[in-house]
Picture 1: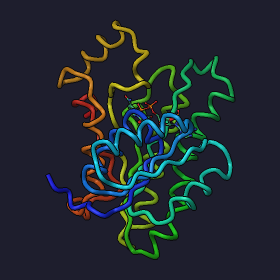
Picture 2: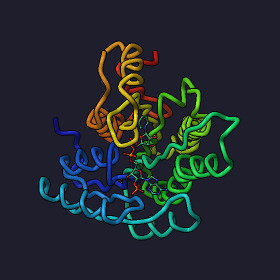
Picture 3: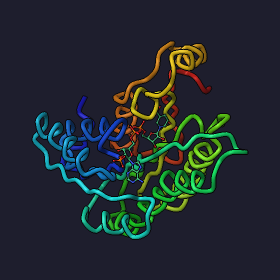
Picture 4: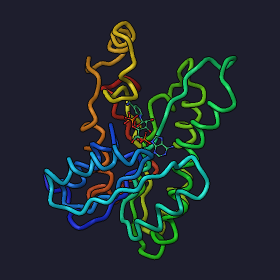
Length: 245
Ligand code: NAP
């Protein structure tokens, strides 16, 4: 389907692997100029090669650690103009609260929530001037329902939802939409460590009876970026096989 995104420029944080990479491939297929950013230059280069092999669009890479100070500003300056921002980079550092270190709390909050804040703030001035812009924050069903052993991750993802709704209210009058996607359990590096038993227990909670794949999330991101979603803002689109309803 033509999503009418040809010629748009998108920045996808954490675009080297998993959900971010699937989003990058999907936006490239729609004829967008694609910027992907994450820590590992090697993964970024490999992702760029794979995207270029399939789609004839410009693909730029930016290696930086978003949990650290000025790196976000440097990436935003290097990107220059963008129409769509996908705040996708995220990590987990799981553990029960009693054993959770300050470092594990800080690294998850800094990457998942502060990273999104910093990128969004850095692009807002340009989006306001353009009187357009699409911001898509990748949250999680864990931010909606909580999960034992993931207090830091759940707080970051619930925080992202509150952030999404607040910014949607601030920027709506200027033609900028801000939405979140809450993926359920999607097969990526992040969920690869789940044991067979844990996977079987999870499947019992999913009405559609299977884990999701990265293209399921990319399809939702394309929709929220497309002109068809021009009247949708401040929403959380749950893509989870019906797990949370
Ligand atoms: P993934 O395969 O582990 O990929 C994470 C991406 O983020 C990688 O590109 C990684 O690259 C980048 N990244 C991590 N920390 C970074 C940092 N400090 N600075 C810059 N880049 C960083 O994860 P995924 O499963 O695709 O998840 C993507 C997003 O979806 C995350 O926000 C995650 O919380 C959310 N999500 C995933 C699931 C799921 O089931 N997979 C479910 C709900 C929500 P480098 O390591 O090279 O930096």
